[in-house]
Image 1 (spheres, rainbow, N blue to C red):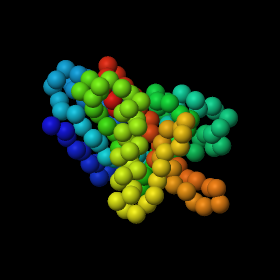
Image 2: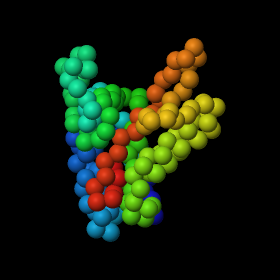
Image 3: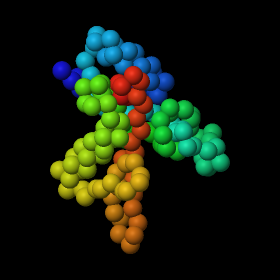
Length: 152
């Protein structure tokens, strides 16, 4: 079974990581169900593996955490829902690229159900919406950690 957890209060980033790493160990050991966790963080930036200090305009504005994921800097804060998928990829073909593609597809389809047209961009990870005149907004950033084939 898959557990859905929805947190109604702001969850500090280090607390979320600690909780997820514990759950990942339990999933690997067969002691806990996979989980999808919806939450919000207080204002913060996560730094992906491509993040460069010079790119952060005001580095003292919010805490910055090493994300352990790809990408550059990502802002997280109140009103912005974060969804963490704690899933065992051994049950899903051990294909991280396909997993990311599937996440993008879930987001595109979910937005479509609200009348929002969103799409992928070739060579980029995430989901975008057109703003017109050749402009676009990234509506969903995707970052995934994988530990012994369990995502978080």
